[in-house]
Length: 273
Image (cartoon, rainbow, N blue to C red; front, top):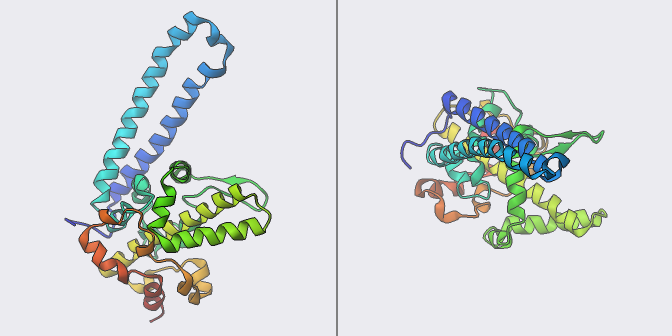
């Protein structure tokens, strides 16, 4: 791993934020411009439909340019930071720019922008409040859309086979949801959503580990996720980063050697010394 960093540069955060939001807006604009072709009665008139098509092509070109920039940043950032190098070997490798836009460092006392629990549970995942209102951030809309596509992927089961602990977790959660009365298909989707939180938690943990190792933060700068702060013994049942690798062969050698030491147990030990 060449020139790999633990602390994400402000310039990269700003560029990732800009590209992420631009992509989200371009996708909305493209949908708004092209959707009428499917439903609006005015476009049943052939001459009007043909005259309108160049405008849809223009919007498509704008969207493709932003998508290409997003892909370029994905490749660049995958080799630049420890937590994104880890991401490259997970199911979320296509979402790397989102985790540069919101790096783990922003959950610490050094840059206290987001609480770790919110980072893991709600920042990247659409959720509903107790009153039923839906909360969905821009990174959640982008990441969750890709993840939903992944869970329909015909080889998802094969990926889970490479992660026995995560596979067991999904099966257990599916049973829990079906026992609460959810249909099996819905229970499976909810279980995969919970698995997504596990992976996000591990991305966060890898980032925190290297921030400590490279002395960007001290152990006392770490803010524990709410449940762990309340019940530290829960680390015994949590799934570690080494157990959520769907593409382990992509992992850089240096990170692969270090990964067995990056555990939730380490996090509890270092914050309670």
